[in-house]
Image (cartoon, rainbow, N blue to C red; front, top):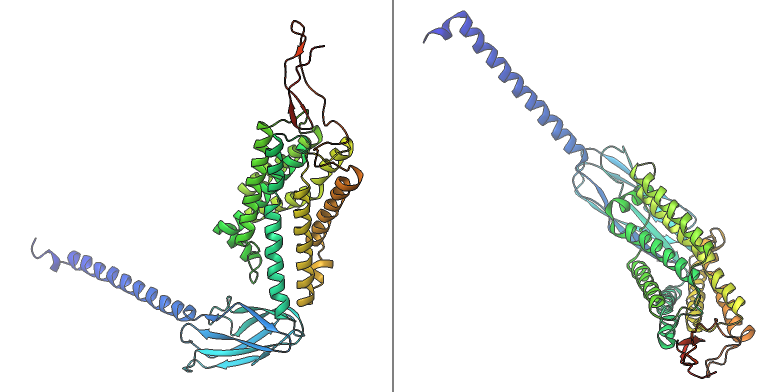
Length: 424
């Protein structure tokens, strides 16, 4: 038993174990070599010091291009300009040897014409390193003063639109009535702002959605900023407060119309189908958020119609805050002014006339604001000091006690509480 390893059978098992051990060692060796080769091929990256560069017309700015690691072989770097009539790059080509110690290069950019362009890096051969993040979005502007004026105008219209909700809320509180505020307009406004908040919050805060956006637009910027999120959430909150007032204060005979309910039903079905398609991976969640934004745009086109028609039927604007209209008008005008300033400063008139959606929506809202102002001050002039309208806003609802011969129920006229106790 002790000498069994000396037998032919024992020697066979011993040789077999040695062979298996050699195979394992060889496999580990091969894996190690492949890992080293892969790491050696992918360890270097090209980066840029900034991906957003602003250049004044006929002036020059620069950005840095740098390597994160040493190269495994010689390369040629070429700079590709999206619009060559807008910017000029110097140098437009680099030849880098793998033995070069230098790992940082300054690239100058000269603005030839106003506009937007992208400077990208292309490497030959393209399998030596990763250069997908080596690009710069270049903006050539005519005037730095116009740029700062545009920023100020942007903040002013942001504040005007944010504050525009409160004159209506205060008016409802002061009158203890929401008679005159159309419920169709209010319900459409709420749905629109919820859709807008979903789009902004989803694209800004959900990493998967943001990743889908950058896969679709690799050299783009996230279009949602923090002020967009604040406005959408604040607008939703203010609209909810107004709706709560409808459950507290006098509403008269108002209700959400059948037409508005059908519109809400169509929107709900559309959103539910979109959610199901996103869950089933038929569409991406980014597409779902875009559909939400389309709903918001559609609502913006129609939401003012019910209120304008309601004022026309009543021949009055009592209960519909004119302060809200003035602030909305101010915000809309400033928004369009900012778009015009930017279009001139960056010579980007296509942003207005080539894709008129945003500008058209702003103009559409301003046009309705002007119509509401005409209704308030011209067509259905109101004596605000006496808080009277040209007509009674709704029929008085009261009850009559035959025994006492008195009206016992409080009645409302023009939104004011009136106690009638006269004997017939």
